[in-house]
Length: 451
Image (spheres, rainbow, N blue to C red):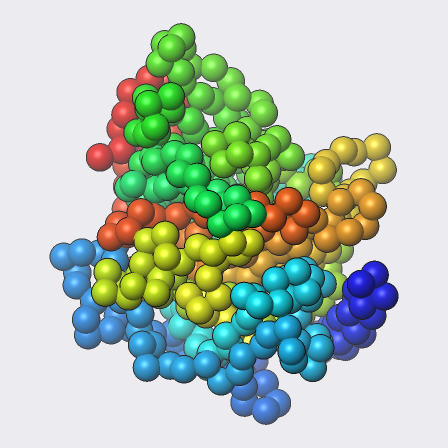
């Protein structure tokens, strides 16, 4: 197996090596490149189409139920099925982690590849600010921060990224909606047997203050736990600062009736609410301070990634194959419920710095150039073996012109446990234009503010 993985790694590295040959400039934004820096044109064989502005809400979208988004491509069928019998023919577009998935779960794991749909659309303000950010955003503080003193903000920070950290800042500043309300957000993890453990229910807010005027933060979330009884009443809040990526985290416990600092809500601290099967910085593929790693930009290439997963996120109650807990099987989510597409991605490799500690010694990030939120990551242990894979099964918010936010699924290839964090059946994710400023003050954590 080790020889197979080495061969896969070399093949992947070779395929990536030519992807930096074309040097784009600011003048290409809005032409050869989209305003946020994705390649606008189709690929050589047309399997990735040209970007034409994204999609509009389908006819069956109900504005009275804005959090539920019907699949705009219900008639699409897989154009390719990759499984244990043929994955070796497609290794140039697969990662080591996916190869291991085929080897570990040969009977159940497969990749259903659908037609590529460049579905995401954005507001005009995002497009304009992304163009402007190309010349007004710069990193600071070594370079753990973003300088917003010259107007940097409200768009992708680095539409023509020059290094891995700039790609990661684009991931941090991707537009998913200013605030997203997630009512009845559930956390589960699956044991190797397939048994599901429902570990929590919460109401949550995801916040992107980079899209506010004069931002000082780039990401935040607030959780208000409602179940089970041991968690009910607990509230947590995390805010990530632009100046130096510092994370400010607080938690409220009804047992003590106190709001306390929560410094462990970061980096490789295991998330206890899902049995420790993921770390805090596994959130949205990677979240938090980037200081423990060297971030190397490998290049831009074509890969199969989860994309346009409306069926997975917004399953119709009549879809018995994937509704509710039916979408989860032993070892990994049910393959039939996940849509994969051939998309262009940025490959960033994070290598742990000397003198730093983290449970992941290396991380490969494969991040969509269209949304900067879709894709997946593979994480390695200190022995150089693939340890976990983090799938981001997203679906753009077509009614709000935003990339949206994703289910968080971290698959442990050693233990066979995986997480499943997302919306309860029948629930959706709704965008919000504003909330009182006190929402993001730790002084309000002693009470619920999410309705």
